[in-house]
Length: 200
Image 1 (cartoon, rainbow, N blue to C red):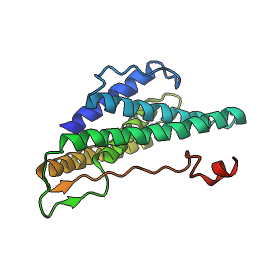
Image 2: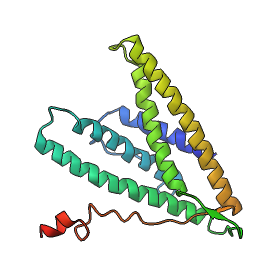
Image 3: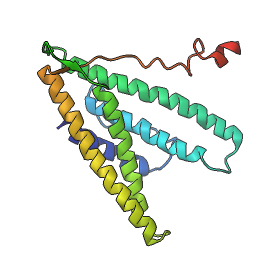
Image 4: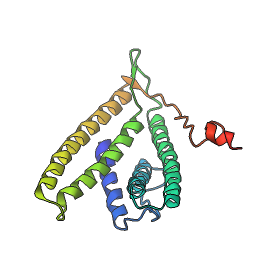
C-alpha cells in the first residue's frame, strides 16, 4: 500500500533527523533521485526541519535579529514544501496518465499530494506527542493527557491513510480524476507582494 510505504519513510526521516537534532544538518536521502521514495523522504525532511525551526522561533528569549532570520528561513521552507507537493502530484499524474476518467468521474477536494502533505505533518505530531508520553520530568497527569492525544492522532493517521488509498484507487479506476493548480504563493514574489514592490 502506498500510504504504508509513505508512513514508513516518514518515520525513517524523523528518526534520521533526531540522530543529530540539528536544523542545519544536511539531508542525506538514501533513495534514487527519480523515485517516489526520494520525493517522500525529502518532503518529510523539509517538514521536520521546519517543525524545529517553528519551535526555535518561539523561544521567548530569542534575539530579534535571529528570529527574523529564522522567519525568512521558514518562508523559504514553506515554498520548498509547496514545490515538493507539486513534484509528488506530477509523479502521480504521470503514473495515472493512461487512465481514462469515466463519464461521471468527479474531482476531489484536494490532490493526493496535499493529502500526503497532511500525512507527513501528522507523522511529526505523532512522534513528538509520543515523546511527551515518555517524559520523566513531568507528572503522570501530563503523560496520561498526552497519551489520549496520541491515541487520537494515531486514529487520524489510520483514517487519513485509508482515505488516501481510496482516492488513489478511485483515480486508478477512473472514478475520480486529478487536476492540479500551482499554489500561486504571493508573499515571496517581489512582483506580487505590495510591501516588496513598494520598497523598490
